[in-house]
Amino acid sequence: MKIFVVNAGSSSLKYQLIDMENEQVLAKGLCERIGVSGAISHKAADGRTYSADTAMPTHSEAFEAVVYALTKSEAKVIDSFDEISAIGHRIVQGGSIFPESCLITPDVLSKIEELGALAPLHNPAHVLAIRACIKTFGEEIPQIAVFDTSFHQTMPAKAYMYPIPYEYYEKYGVRRYGAHGTSHRFVSDRVAVLEGKDKRQIKIITCHLGNGCSITAIKDGVCVDTSMGFTPLDGFMMGTRSGTVDPSALTYIAEKENLSPADVNRICNKESGMLGISGVSNDNRDIAAAAEAGNKRAQLAVDMQRYEILKFVGSYIAAMNGVDAIAFTGGIGENDPGLRKTVCESLEFVGVKLDEEKNQLRGQEVKISTEDSRVNVYVIPTNEELAIARDTLAIISK
Ligand code: AMP
Image (cartoon, rainbow, N blue to C red):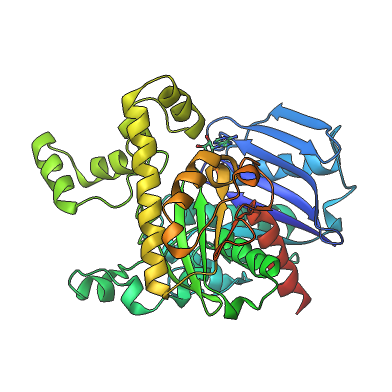
């Protein structure tokens, strides 16, 4: 059985075709500049590639280009789209409405659209993509929504409420929703397997560290707290996002520089974080190289991010009254031994002991703590597409 996984943005579309018999990716690709011009780059599992500049005024043309790439191009992997059993969509915001993945019905689609108020950059694009799929592939093929927020819906109110007047929660749904939930769920499930224990019996902290970063506390098998909030801007510093900042600092800057709310949003989302502090780049590798070469601001960015990660991990250990396993994932979490070392060294007080040699490994699943470490520490490459495909399969199999 083959599942088509879609991660749609307003002008881009990432996809994977996964064979669920063996959970292998048959092909993956990316459509870019949708609505402007249009280009597709596609790669089959055996290394064959196909790329083309194709007019993509809407997502429908992008999906038509994907169908061509999958079924007719020099990198085709199937004969017809009829071989595909279902489509799984990554949906960024499910609000309080969607505690789990579900079949997309007209009612579900209109709720995803309404939730666009909470995720204006993402949900409207998802809706466009779902409608385009109906147009391109017909009404019969099941489409499944897998929400980034669902895993965090188990948080208690004391963790998800912001201490601002209650009416804003009631009127506008302002609260912590979290993000990266599909990744945190995938990684924590894997931790339980590696620990050989029922997930409900262990306390886990998952650190998803990439361009976007979030940390989640998982107790009794469910998320009890997470660092991202109302939007994926909350938490700690990321590639270009600030994470939490004293709101008065922002209103002060806005007054001084005569900035609108949209300006402040842009600055905090696109010009802050590692980029804002280092002035070098948002990319961890560039910043590490600059720090190595003696750039003090790059070093400060590195130190600040590691310190903030440590504080979140520490606070979640306290929130759960302990921790059994910590996992690192995401481009940085999977590939930066220096960051993992700095964080783990300051967790010696809870019994973390790092295996220096294993910690040098990059991009692969490995336990990086020693055998006598009281807390097991893992690197677990995340696979959100596979998690989406698994949910999709589970729902259509019901
Ligand atoms: P993601 O958003 O998960 O794709 O992660 C992107 C981040 O991971 C970027 O900041 C990259 O610099 C970082 N990253 C990717 N590969 C490496 C690597 N080999 N060493 C250090 N950082 C890396």
